[in-house]
Amino acid sequence: MTDTRLSPFMAVLKRTGLDALAFVPGPNFRRLFLRDFHLMERPLLVLVPAIGEPVAIVPNLEMASFEPINFPGSVFDWRDEEGFMGAFKMASEALSHLGKGSKIGLEAQRMRVFEQMALAEVFKGAEFVDAHQDISSLRLLKSPNEIAKLKKAIEISEAALEATLQQVKVGQTEKEIESILLNELFSHGADGLSFDPIVAAGDNSAQPHAKARPDYKIKSGDALLIDFGASWLGYNADITRTFFVKEVSEFDRAFYETVLAANERGKAVTKAGVTASDVDDNVQKVLEGSQFAEFRRHKTGHGLGLDVHEAPQIMRGNHTKLETGMVFTVEPGLYRMGECGVRIEDDVVVTDTGMECLTSFPRELRIVG
Image (cartoon, rainbow, N blue to C red; front, top):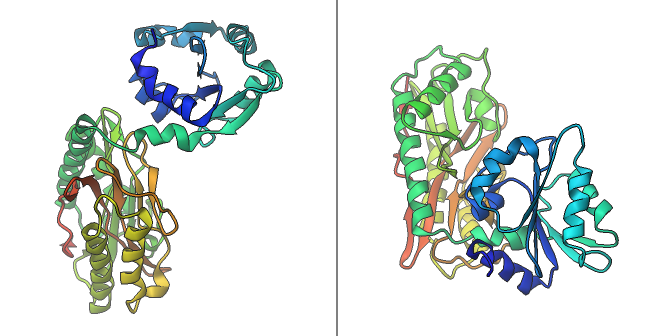
């Protein structure tokens, strides 16, 4: 009898006509087995065939961690001194019906080249296809349990942000503020980080993916952009708020209020049945209709869950219809290079009646320091 954990993946195989799916550690692997492993130089890989039992290729040093998974198939472990190709060969022998003419779906945005090369070496004549979207689509609709975990990650994040802001002072460096934020995240219960936080002030705030500088001291009038998130039980928050230090010019206030209006518009139009493109189009029209249209640089948002960036992508041209249970970010931004950047990011879930905003941290313009 097929392990029920495999049922969604068997459905993908049936729908796509693929002969097998290959997974490496990551969010799809975690969804399948509820356990994380690192991507490293030692390949760990699972093959789920349409016919027959799955196989796993596992470094021997990971076996103690892998055994609690109760893997529903054959496990071929290997030691460093032996190399991994022997385990790949044994896996191919266990799935001897795969080979010439077979189609094996890969997580093309996750799997490394050397892993695909090893598969090609042992499954002679097989065709390898990009099945990333098909596999990841299984994570599109979040269960109530998943949404509860996201809410907890967000709750931790927002408490840490408020505690950080209480300590911000003129003259601190971006790195010092980042250090405070990291300490507060773990003090408030984070069991990991969604990603390395972005703490950017002044001209650095105009870099959407800025790095905190150890030598720039925040000063009066600076924008202070903080993009960050706690991870809790594998689920990730992703929040951005932009503040101003001590004071804000009328020009920057208008700049900020434009982004806030776009954020509010994106949330207002979010509901089941509209497309991801519809949401982005509404947001972009607010920005495009303002005096700051030239400072737009990116789409409205992205899906959120076990991965920080996953489907659906909230952008023009993506005609995926929103469904109850989809979680994504609404994060419009404007960026005057060399001067100032503003981004306001919320996490939302589509509901039967519209949407629920999972983030509650205030969005009104706030002066800190």
